[in-house]
Length: 313
Image (cartoon, rainbow, N blue to C red; front, side, top):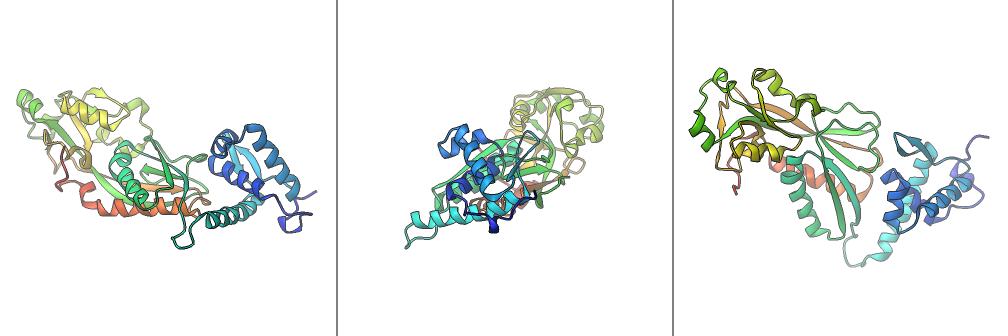
């Protein structure tokens, strides 16, 4: 028998069941939703089953190791968001602006998380203290199934389905060495001389982002020195004299002991893209974080491209 539309269900769904669906849809997992709502896994399962009986069809389906909402589930989610908004209005002071609360989870690269996302979120939370944001630092391609994530920031144009994507801004990578290293080993005056030095960069076999493979193209004969999946390890290893680091300018330029080398020859410009689930942007908390991050990125556009003085340590 085909699923019944919510409009012809025998009785309206329990608002608590709708809120449970909302929590599962946002996290992609029963256990995460249970923790957020202060319930146990069994109660989450029972409430989803009750909602499906009421609506006459499945609201969730298994996909990619998590749960994804069905077409019927998306209809129910719109009703659930109305319930959530109504509850927020009842809990807020009528004399104040509507309260912005909840948890927004985003993933981004190390440097972007520290110098763009973190200050943007902190500024937003100064106005919206009930808002919670979780930032997962990772350098990878955009996920096809972003369960548990509201926002992704990735390097390079994402190739994803069922997602909203847009360009945030661009940044530049350059070659850097510490002043001490250059005193001991000399300053390379040409690209050929630079290739005689060891490279500090990502672990080649673990690099997932094609756009970050520039050194293999620009300086293929440079031997690896200290490599890591974390850009802050690149920076500190370069400062300690492990070799010449291929570093984001907006991170490296903060350190007066680092010198940029051959900027006319090595200035790799890459793009930051934002990826969102289609249902995420309608959530006020997610929309607020998205706007805050976009504003911060725009305000730092020249700094991200390099060559602009930044606050040093």
